[in-house]
Amino acid sequence: MSKRPRAHIPLSELLASALADKLAQENRDTLRELKVPAHVVIRLFTPDHVILHAHGGADRWWNLTMTLRGEMLKAKDRRDTKVAAKIKRIRGETRNGPKRKIPSRPFNRRTV
Image (cartoon, rainbow, N blue to C red):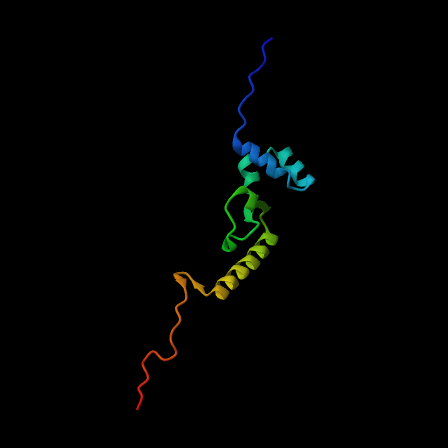
């Protein structure tokens, strides 16, 4: 009797399996019972920066955490947006670069 060759496991299946481990046990069991496709499990999550991108955080695996989508993530995103905007205001940055200082008297004083 010959062994059946082991099939290649697609990366999406591996990713879905790893992400499912972050779910609560009862949710994970329900998804397994329903044999939900991998792309459905993957879409339950979104990457979130540990160090905000606006603060110089990298788009690499070590600065990303996969977070379950929902109200808690929306609230965190709102806070992160406020923090990033405040940092830009403090630094004096705009979309086109740093703010230019407008002189208080754009004309030369004449001495009389």
